[in-house]
Length: 248
Ligand SMILES: Nc1ncnc2c1ncn2[C@@H]1O[C@H](COP(=O)(O)OP(=O)(O)OP(=O)(O)O)[C@@H](O)[C@H]1O
Ligand SMILES: [Mg+2]
Image (cartoon, rainbow, N blue to C red):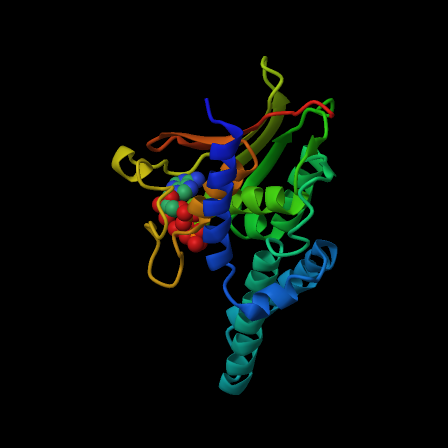
């Protein structure tokens, strides 16, 4: 059983780690933009990216136009990645608001609509609307969901995949969020390492390997836990569990 002092120490260490990873001054500054604005930015950026992609697929496009449209696409993609990162840094101090878990799930699924469509992934949701709101920083919850769901989408690049997000209360009165995909699964030797910082199986430049490390740190900081289950060629599911604290 962890004492309060242990938890406090852990929180301090984890907080230091997170601070180190708060990339740089610029991100922190930009982080003051509210997540609502960030969300709104993502939709037009997705349209710009896909329109550029459609033009680039055309056969008789002059070389000059091709080059310019290529630039538009890569800059729009860069901005879209930036907006995703920003969700993490907005309103960092608000750890005590009442957060509706289902709303956070809906927000992130909506936010990643284009990422799912691009990969031909069908998104299913099974949300328990009787869930209690939980006292936590809603933006950190969004970051947790974003990291796990992005991994699932990235694991299903070949098209035809399915993603299921489920929320429920378990018999102990804890709140559970399950994110399940039909991707290739994670081999056992890899599974042991996925929460390590900088562990990635992605090509250089495609993944930092920090996603799940940050996710686990955040979840544990918030008094929760994260578990993974995976079967080769069947898919992977991540379960995030939070304790509902009684009102003081
Ligand atoms: N749903 C999943 N299906 C298959 N493999 C996964 C899944 N989720 C995570 N992984 C594996 O876990 C590794 C670590 O994930 P993590 O999110 O920490 O880093 P990353 O995705 O590689 O990089 P980043 O998150 O910075 O983009 C991934 O490289 C991948 O091999
Ligand atoms: Mg990742």
